[in-house]
Image (cartoon, rainbow, N blue to C red; front, side, top):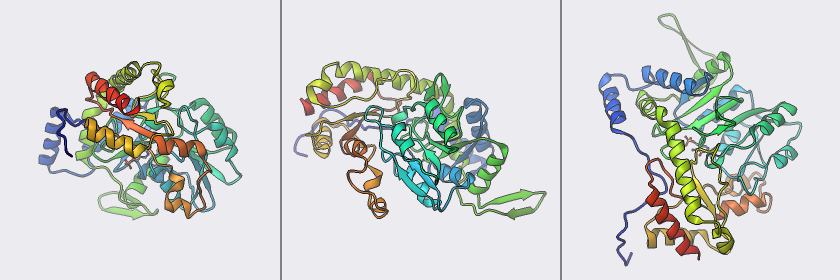
Length: 378
Ligand SMILES: *Cc1c(COP(=O)(O)O)cnc(C)c1O
């Protein structure tokens, strides 16, 4: 870089752990119990309470949660699972991981979530499940989603990785529905550094979830042990659970703060921004989304990489892209997917940019970001 920039670097995401939680992590490190123990149990109980009393099990990622939900549902070779091409690749990878066939349906250009008409059109006699994604924390029409699931007798594995603190008709996402998976990866509204949880429907499903997360083991008596299913190594540590316990009580306040930041983004962009630049703002939701991400769609004529470079080099602002169309990755092209199959997803996947949005972002930062975006696009 030839020019020094007086403004501090502003990343698009930055985790924040408060001092009380850091102290509590220190206590765990001194306690002699590092892996799954009392903190994991307490975190699962707290999550369950937040999610209306539903059964919750924790894991070491928000990816294995979805894989395990598919296994609990008995989904495997010969089964089709429908999902969106615009998500983190984990969402589709877990379908392949269990031996099932991923099927994509295009997205809605406004919400950027699965288009439920296209989803319905993609259902075949082999379809067993749907994995909807609430991109940026914005839920879809949950009544219609579950109406379709009922009509076609499909399981739903909600990829709510980004949606802890989001709501539908006043109820938290995860407090109703079928399987619901959350991620606690470092960028998420609540982070355990890495981690996730799965909401299940019955004690039997919870037992299976416990087996799949730890080698299929069931213990009994003083020294009894049996293994009757093939499980993996997916348990959460007490260190991670302590991070989660420190943040869960504040999760609604976090969502409220992010909503106010999002509204400030809209105010700063103003009503003429879209018409003047050809860019597209997200849905101005004030009810349901936890505003995990604030994403704009660049006009077609703008090369995203150049925009991102300008934001970084001229304005010292980090941006991200969430996400590239999954069906165009080599692994998916090898399964027959091609350009042109999901035109809305392809346009959005190539032109979407994620602007800074995190728990400690300030109103003044939003103003700085919008001024920078405008200077790049006008
Ligand atoms: C973060 C995320 C995941 C994966 O979560 P990990 O905890 O990183 O495994 C899956 N889907 C979406 C939409 C995500 O944002």
